[in-house]
Length: 161
Image (cartoon, rainbow, N blue to C red; front, side, top):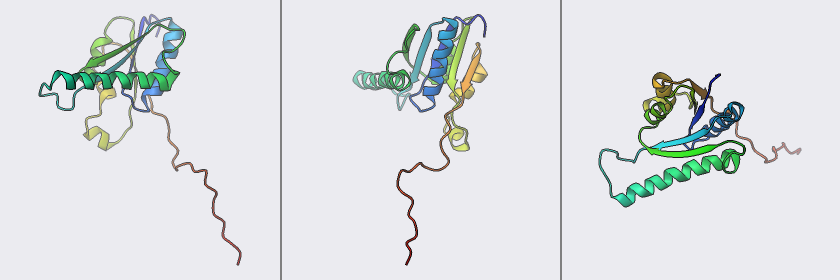
């Protein structure tokens, strides 16, 4: 990744966004490159143009998801690097692939969770970026969840009797 000039981190607000964002910040620090944190959103029904007030509420919600993700990852903006938060209205994969298009760009995304259900629902942002981006794409796998829920409750023991 020599010659990296800008690091793009695509975030969705999902738990998988946090490790990808942290990795992108680490790379930005290593390469002394700006970090562009991008959240793209679509209104619930993008075929119709809703009232301007409703569009503004949706955009405000998108900004809140972006800031919440930054807070979960770093407690605010990451220290020691130039960070540019960006919210765009549009399909996430297309927005990410079209913005990270200059020589020296690197796009860091969460790899998403595998599974037939998510594929059927069209949750293919990482696949879209890997197929269409004109810059290198680094897909960070989601965190591993324990196979059994963790419980602090004491384990019952059979009583003698």
